[in-house]
Every structure is written in C-alpha cells, then in structure tokens.
Length: 347
Image (cartoon, rainbow, N blue to C red; front, side, top):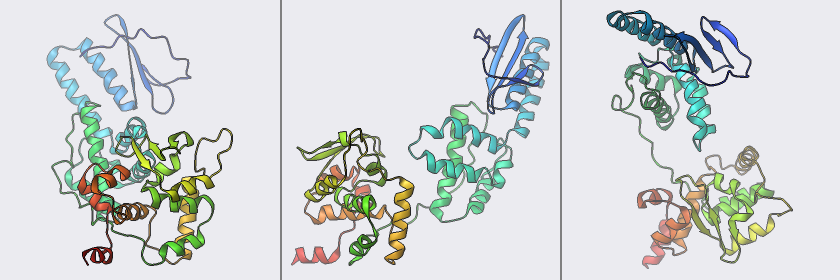
C-alpha cells in the first residue's frame, strides 16, 4: 500500500486526540499522524472508522509479510463494512456533493429525511435492492416522490464508487424498477381564476404572478433577475443561470415592461424583485385559499404562459426560444392548448 508522506505544516485548528495516532479537527476531520518506515505519514479522513482502518493498514504494511498483510486487509475491510453506515455516507454526500447542485435546498430536505429512515442505520456495504424498496415504502407519498428518494440513493452509490473508490455495488441502478414520474401536470388557469387570484395578491407577489404569465419564466429565474440583465431598447432580458445550464434571451411584451416599471430601482438595488421565496410562497398559498383554488401551483403559471405563446401565434422554435426548452417533447409537456380556440381556427 502506498504511504502518503506529509510535508505540510501542522494545522492551527484546535485538535484533540481520539485514538492512537488519530487527532480530530472539527466534526468531519480525522487526521492520522504516525511514523512509517522512518518517515512521518499523514492522511485526513471524514470518519473515524476510515482513519482507524488506514492507520492499521499502515502498521500492517510495515510489520507483516505479504500473506499476513492480505489477511489483515481483509479483516479491516470487513470491520469497515460493519461500521460504515448509510447515514455516514449521506453525511459525506451532503457535505461534498449537494452544495454544488442548483436544487441543493430541496435535496438537503430529502437527505435529512433519509437520515432518519431505517435504511440509514444499515451498513453501507450491505444494502440490497430489497432494502431500497422498503425504504421507498417507508418514505411514502406519490410514486414520483418515491422515485426521487430512490434516485438520491442511487446517486449516492454512484459517487461512492466513482469518486470515493468504495468497493460497493449500486443497489438501485439496474436492480429495481423505479416508480414512474407520474402523469405530467396539465393545469392551466380556467375561467376567471386569474381575476380571482389577483383579488388576493398584492405588491410584488401580484407583479410576479403577472410577469410569470407574460414571460414563461420559472419562479427561481424571476426571483434571481437583476436590473443589469434587462435591455429596455430591445426590449428583452437575459437569463444566465437557467435550469438547463444555458443562457437564454426572453423578449418582453408591453405588459411585461409595464410590470417592470412598477418595480422600484433604487440606488444600489440589484434585484428586480426583492420578495423572498418563502414570503412569495406564503402569499401565494394565502391567495389561492382565499380564492378557493386549492389545486393551482406557482409552477402551473409556466404551463399557462407556454400555452399562451402558441395561442398568440408563435411557432415552435419561437416558443422554445422564450421558454428555454431544448426538445419538442419537453415543450409539449408544458403546452396545453384550449380545444375551443383550436376549433375556432378550424372554422
């Protein structure tokens, strides 16, 4: 086994000795410091069990012959397989992988729920497809919800194999049949629902409601919009950080421009809309309850906007350039034309 030789300076962080040759710095940093073959060897791990295993393997490498070393390594791996749990793996994933994702907040919620499940206490090396199926049943909810949690576990194992070099098998990918995504939502505003909702929406929440319908922008895109992204001469706005990772230009209708003029642009103000996501959610839930429209969602406004683009006469490419959909199939999922309007065109 290759031994790492440390040449770095000692850490200035406060440390405490937790085992022979092992020191802890904070909740997720365990450093092994020992002499191997006359040289100082050092390595840092996220978990104490991993640090112990590495330390013991260094001892074995310097003190045992090749056959004894193989036996020792097998015992060390067996010990880790018993002690390293799914919860520990989730904690490392939460620290190293989740922060880089756009939907990190949502994934953190799923991870926290997964860490409280029966699966979390099981050995990470011994999880079976049957365990994952039981985990999905324990999580409950819709098929789509179960699918998202199963996908989280699948990606956890993928990272463990490809990035952490763990000798495990993915108990999800190719091993179980995942629940379907469910029937795509086709909810649009019906009748006078728009007018009813506007009765109970005020301020920025009201402006965002109307702006979303005019631009087909996602809630997160609207809340992140800055004044520097808007070109009133074109008139259009540029989205640089979208869900699919590509920037897109969104043309602005007269109604959209009118809404923007209602937003105050003070000195040093960057954001166009300053309401928080939580506040917007609260005001939206209050409005739809007061209007007695409980099944409408904020994201349904994107369906409404995409459908209206076609009803205004835009072709597929024009509509896709506004909504940002890469494929016709995805655009179709967001477009739900009114049959009566189509009938009028047919004559």
